[in-house]
Length: 347
Image (cartoon, rainbow, N blue to C red; front, side, top):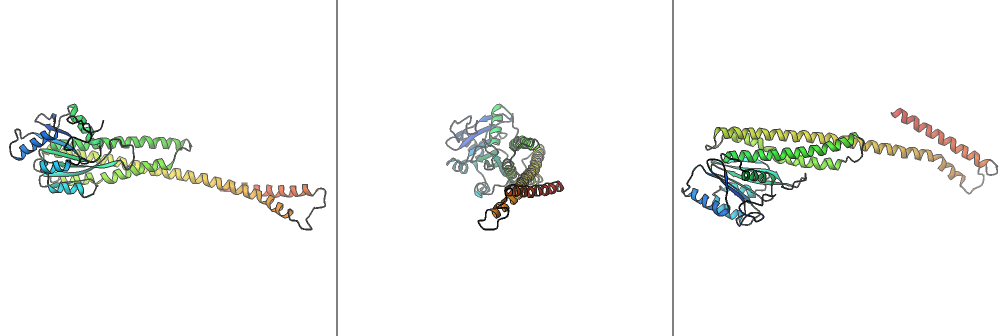
């Protein structure tokens, strides 16, 4: 079930404002669904000081492919210009930046129907402050959908920082599943290679390696940038939230380390398969060379005795044919003996 099928609007890709899903959280941490109209009223009330409960916060998840999404955000969300610059700067590397009392993040995630293809990776943009978490994407992504499902199921969220931490842990869980799936495929290739079955192909490993390399390249900057941010967190962030974010970053680092180890394992298997292919090619070339050498005396003598000139030896002899056959056989046996002798020396 894609994150496009929301609890408050059944339209694919979001409602009339591009809102895929929205939740309003109270002091108890339970999420209550919001549509774009209710979200706009809540945001406008907070901006004018008319918000009833200062402990409330919201999560809004938008589809940027919807033409009305950015217009709604600029009208109601009150985001800093840096967020919109981040949407359009084309830089996909993962990072978290602090702008005054807000956090802006770029996180790369996999498509909902991800099938270990390097092209199935897209960007999730995030804005976090004391009372609002806003996420936006252009393709259905697994992390946002899992978090939406968990909140709709009744999971409690204490604060906007807790929601960001849950988003990061959910993304780490998605990456763990990807690494586990890739490991199973590598295990099957390795078993085929050890059993000397020729179904193991470098192309299968190469595709997996490209996916892991791209994921690591896009995700690797996140732990370092987050650690730098946690040295100077915003004032509304509680110490416990800072500690949980630090733990989430460490968990992310472990996943990235496992991904790097799997890349090294794939590289070794590729080298082993390449060596096996080269050995088979050398063996085939050697057999072809031996056959060519064995046929060489026959071809030479056939060419000589096939000349239509006078003076051909044994032309008048009744046993000439068998003498020539004996000569050819002798040369062939000597050439074969020399080839086998060299092969034994090579071993």
